[in-house]
Structures are given as structure tokens and as C-alpha cells.
Length: 501
Ligand SMILES: [Zn+2]
Image (cartoon, rainbow, N blue to C red; front, side, top):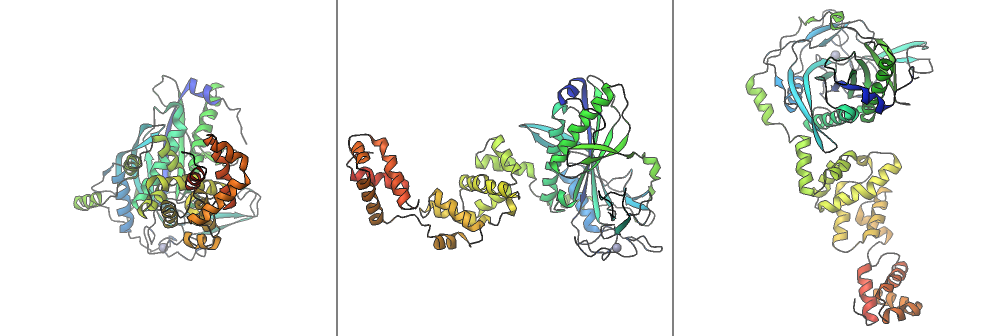
């Protein structure tokens, strides 16, 4: 699929300076569409959520969804943008079967929010990504190409169209050119999209699930010779739909551009497709210029003029933003930046927080989610949050350990039981008989038996080789199927052999 022989990443960076631009589309989680009352439920019967307006039938008139505007303003405020006092929608004219109106209602030169920034953390350093604009628009319908091998239109026998998605509100967030990232450009791009996704989720305006297409990223990239001021020609890789893919797409395009430029070629301004299988991109279509869309103000919609009082009310109601919250929790939990990054990468912040809220100590909550449970999620290939165990259940396991009913090993078995669907922690402990043996009589008997069965070792201990006690502790733990308190067992052994610990 690779057309050009790539240049190594290091060689590319030695010769060129990458400039990025990221355009992220976020599908809002409003109950109804942006310009009509149709439902937005995912997975509904095709074309069951349509009406004359979102099908673009003659005579139908759009009405703006107030929640959509409110969400756009919240996003703008959270991105430190200025909010327009007055702005309009515009028609972006193009013909494509998935857009039955033959134009997309969008915003052109009057976006609702502009001139902001988002700070992201990359390798312990803060990188500021400047935001050009965030504007409102609507999604298109969905085409399914049937009969071909690839699912693409080439080779298909026919295509199916579903207009349920047509008219669902979108916010498009466009960065200013991102310069100065150097060899960290792929990481900066990924960190930006990650931070943006967290921000959107924290505002409650969208679930921003990239795998569901609720958030999609277009990656613009150009190279300029090191030391040059003027930007090179850019390529635009469309619909890069995972965080990892954003990073890979930037890396691939840097290497491809460098190869083309290094061989004396020119970069064509075009859109490109990203391929998950090998992380490559291939040529799509030559990019339209803005004038090709013949934008003009939408005559059927009134301008949007949010009052300053409303904007300030929304500003006052913003939640603690993810990066601020993260830094606060990092301090509270006493973690290094690196440790916090691991927690973030594992998608464990909310789970740990919820476990602490259920009464678990911070270090214990983190230990289980980042240890045993992260391992299981990884093994099963699922997100941590998708594991069949709740923060309350993890907190209960922590409590059982704290009160001495479970030791570490038994706690692990309890969690295993919960994950296997055997019930809550208490139920699993009862069913599996996992309680720590704390009955001194039973423990004493087990210790006596271990001493009798290991006379030689017992003699060594009596003779002062206290380190040998480990073998006896092991024997007792084995006899009690791991259900004894190892520290107490050790004490008992030394007591019975008349040795000082
Ligand atoms: Zn509709």
C-alpha cells in the first residue's frame, strides 16, 4: 500500500520541521438532531429517525437545537475561547449522496467560538495547542457499499444509505498550526486528542467514543526545511479514529513527506485515507478549496446571539476540567507524573476515584486497579471499565484486607471470583471459603504439625538461624491453603521454638 519508500523518522526530523493542524469532529449527545426534532438514538432501524427537514425535502424549515448551541459554548469556554456575540450558520454546498440537502449546514467565517488553547502534557512538559475555532455543524448520513471485497465504493454492486445520522449535531474544533513540537509531533497530536476527549466527556456533552465514530480526527501535516519560516504544502489524512492511529498517521506522514521532498518531488494538497492494518496512508481526492463549496449565510436560520449573561452562567457552571483535576488527584494520591500517566493510559482515574469514594485507601484502590485488574483487562483485551467488577466491590475487598479477613493472596482469589460472576466479594469469600484462618487454636495446630514434619529446620531455627523460619511459614501456608496470616504464623513459629524474632 506504501507508494513511496519511506525515510527513517530520525532522518526526516534531521532535515525537516513538522507543522500540524488537527481538526476534530465531535458528535454531541443531544436527544434530538441539530435542526429538527428527530431522535439521535444509535443503532436504530435505518432511516427510522428522519423527517422532511433532515431529508432536505422542499418546503421544510430548520430550527436550531438550543442544547446544541449550549454544548458548543461550553466546549468553547473549556477551550479558553472567546464566544461570538453574534454568529450565523452557513451553507457548505456540495453534492454527495449521504447529504440529501446537497449542502451541509455549518459555520464559515462566523464560528461560535474562536481563539482559544488547550494545554497538554507530553513527557512531563506542558505543550500549549492553540485553537483557531470551534464551530457548529451537522453530521451527514451513512453510506454502506455492498457487494465488493473491501467495503469501499470501488467494486461494490450497490450502496445503501441511512439518513439517521444526517443532521446530528457536530462541533468541529480546529487548531491553529501546531509548530515547535519537533520530533514529539506524533505524541503531541495524540496527547491533544486524548486531552480533548477527556475534556468533552467531563462537560457531559458527548461520550466522545472514537470507536463509535462520536469523535473523529483529521490530521493535517506539512514539513518545512529546518530553519525555514514558510509552511510546506499539507496533506489531510481523514477520519483517523483512534488515539493510537492519530500518532501513527502523523509519524507516517512525516516519513512520507520527507521521502517525497527529499527525492525532489512536491507534496500534493490532497486528502488521504489512513489504514489501520499497517499505519500507512494512501491518496484520496485532491482537496477542495473553500471557494469550491460556495459558502453563503443560511437564510432559513436566525443568527445565534448568546447573551453575555448566559455565557457567564455557563462559564460558572463548568466542571473542574480534566487536567486540573488530574493534577489535583496526583498530589492527593502522592504519585509521580509518570505514575499518573500510567493511571491515565489505563483509563483508571474515574475507577480509582470511585473506589476511594466507596471508602478504600488511595494506595489500595490504585494497587488493585493498576495491578491485578489491569492485568486481567489486558489479558481479556477489554477496557478496564468493562471488567465485571464495580468500584464498590473493589472497595469491599480493600476493607476485608484491612480488617484482616483476607490477605493479599485471598483478596486476589476473591477478585477472581467476582470477575467470574460468582457474586460480590462477601459471597465469593463464603462460597470459596476464603477467610484468613485467624483461629489461634487452628493456627497453633498447623504450626505444631509443620514443626514436627520439619524437625531439621526447626533445629536450625532453635540454633539461631531465624531466616530458616520462612520454610516453616511456607509449610503452614500450604497446609492452610494460603488462608493464614503469614506474619502471625511466623510469630507463632518463633514463639513455639523459643526464639526471639
Ligand atoms: Zn429530522
